[in-house]
Length: 204
Image 1 (tube, rainbow, N blue to C red):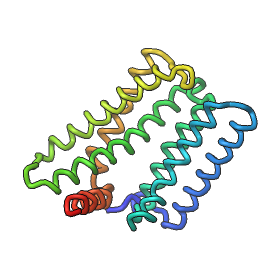
Image 2 (image 1 turned 60 degrees about the vertical axis):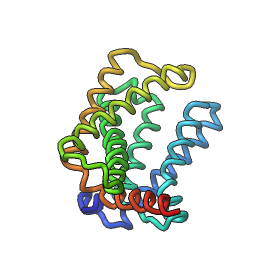
Image 3 (image 1 turned 135 degrees about the vertical axis):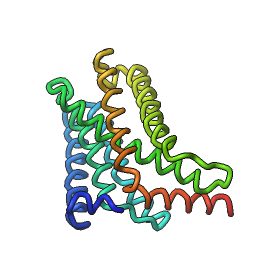
Image 4 (image 1 turned 180 degrees about the horizontal axis):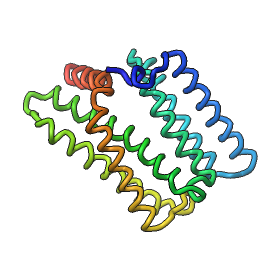
């Protein structure tokens, strides 16, 4: 099952959308440099770097990630970067959407890693229901880590208060549940890649 099929777009269309979003991020990097807006420059640079990871995986390991998954990851980091321009303060719903989209990505990566370890080891046999619990707990744990980072780097990242943190956790959980209920099949190829890397490392 591929995320490309769920979007109803061709691989070329999805790659075009990814490239367009990467150009947007590059533009934000330039804007941040020109205006001296350090935080947006750093945020856009990090986001652009994340969008290039699938290309690195293809070059270094010969793994071609599902174009739909690449698009989803790119969308998540672009939404976050644009939100840093002030949309988080203007629209509460924007923050909720961004956290939900990001949580789906994080949940997918966490599930793929966990499932790869399970398949790799004969000693690990996890009931399907526990896998769903793991996805939610994993995303919430990452959320806690992120909030700690925001407080630690308060000079670079805007901290909006306790109410915002609670809202973030709610929609992080929503994204995790979406992945647990409907999304695990869309990261099956990623599970296979992680498993092949574990096998390669153990044999090497």
